Amino acid sequence: MSSTIELPTDFAPMKNDLILRAARGEETERAPVWVMRQAGRYLPEFLAVRKDHTFFECCKTPEIACELTMQPIRRFKGLLDAAIIFCDILVVPEAMGLTVEMNPAPSLPNPIRTPEDLARLPKHVDVNKELGYVFEAVNLTRRTLQGEVPLIGFCGAPWTLMAYMVEGGGSKTYQKAKEWLYRWPEASEELLSRIAAVCVDLLVGQVLAGAQMLQVFDSWANELPPSVYQKFALPPCQYIAREVRSKLKELGHEPVPMTLFAKGANTSLTVLAEESGYDTLGLDWCIDPLEARKLVGSKVALQGNADPMLLYGGQEAIQQEVKKMSERFLAGGGGWIANLGHGVTPQVQVDDFRCFLESVHKYSRRDAGS
Ligand code: CP3
Image (cartoon, rainbow, N blue to C red; front, side, top):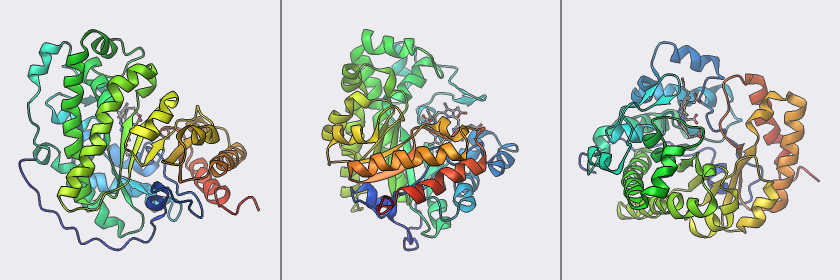
């Protein structure tokens, strides 16, 4: 990191550390709960702010990012056990010099098409200069939270970011990104490691600014066969975990729990538990929680994993499914952080979302069955 930014770090003491304990593998009195995309379009107050600002204006204005992060914490007071900073994984490709538009789906009009295009990327990215707004938003939000719940910082995983940078947006087949992996394996590794270097600085910067947990989102892990996932996507994630820990240590900072959400990489779970270097593994909804626990052993905490579409099934179904999910996670033992298996989607009714949180509070108690 070249430039520096000074931020206040005299934070209020924590009133709720449930998620931090679960991430360290503790069997907590009930499961802590948060939801991916909890700051999002299903909330009317989010839409009210968004109508006056572009998506990236929201990310880049610390006061707005803080307000959006706080909205679900305020509305579901006492029900959410963590806040996640409002931002996006695509700020990294932007910091690497690519144009990123949100209209409304992500679009990168000048993608990296061939290995020659790697020359367009800067050799070194000054993260404080390019992404200082993230650190300011994290710092302001941590202070605004006043210790109510821990604040999660995040970034996209190199494979998922590479896919956006090569495809120029989302994709059904990932034809271009996969062509890179198969045709140009060395150039792919070069691109992945350049992305990983920026991710490390972004995560360390968020911790220095006040983030108390970190999550790496590998949303497109499920697109790769296990051997290809383990050859290309996992190593840069391992690098990120190692480097973040060692940089924090060098800086005299306490380590923070780290979560890897390798969406759908369920056949790699045993390898992830043994070799990824993360404290918590995020699960999508396509694996039974007890089965997942058997695959990972006792080394990691697990996060997840209700089907996001369950929230459209009505409150009776939400309660029943959360009860079943809780029984399966509790039967497996170890640390468990309740969440959906992917983000909450825009048409979800706020009361149904609340029902999900309340159901976790009710059914995930260690004494719930007795
Ligand atoms: O509440 C939170 O979870 C924090 C904020 C957050 C956003 N994006 C805000 C956002 C987080 C953690 C992300 C991560 C993200 N962004 C991922 C990984 C998680 C996942 O969903 O797999 C990915 C793949 C992206 C890229 C991205 N950003 C896409 C594909 C889209 C469009 C699809 C959609 O949901 O509309 C976005 C836009 C985006 N990022 C929105 C939000 C709230 C909606 C856009 C809007 O407000 O108009």
